[in-house]
Figure 1 (spheres, rainbow, N blue to C red):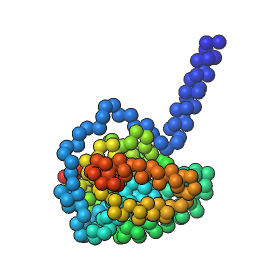
Figure 2: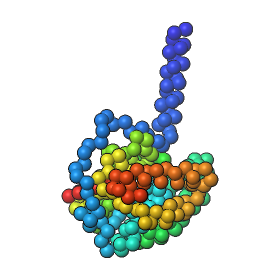
Figure 3: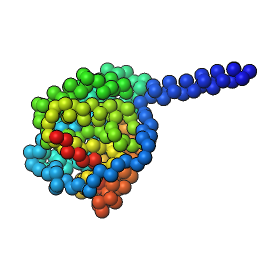
Figure 4: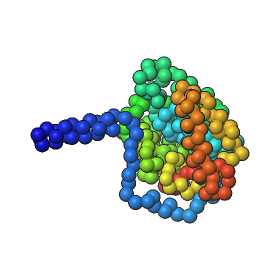
Length: 261
């Protein structure tokens, strides 16, 4: 009887572990608090909002830019920065894993191009890796490295992989890891600006473009509508207000800024 109970518990634990590994969210339970990243850095200090500044954004999915960086990208566009976006996947799973992948892939590519036009992206490049199963492979690192060498950005916006939120999408973690590895391999001197981070040291005031920042979400209706749309609005607003309090403004977006040499 004890063996039967033990086997039943082991089977349940195995099933729970398999389910956790199958779904894309990960618990990021690194011990301790995020390290102090030094004194607060300002956008003026790093020259972020200069005309013609070359900026590369590396994300995992179509819609990541508008979810995490909408206000920062609008401000960069207003300043006259040259913006390039690399998206690791086509988003063919999204929030609806039973949807037909090919039509969803085409739709989400178009949604991202339309949204990126609002913040004046010069180009949107899709690397076409599997949505929900992104790996920090040599192929992915090499693809990002090639774009780094071609664009020679002064600033790279990428997902945090060292100090992410406590619950993070594994594609986000792998996209950030691959982008940072590509930066080190390319040997380009630049600023790394990590978003979706628990250790921000640079805050961008997005208060005056807040309504336009929220409106960017409307371009991703395949993913956010009805109740989910309201939840996304509430989550983004809550996070921006929290970051805003840290710099004394209504709304802000926090980044971890590191010089890469």
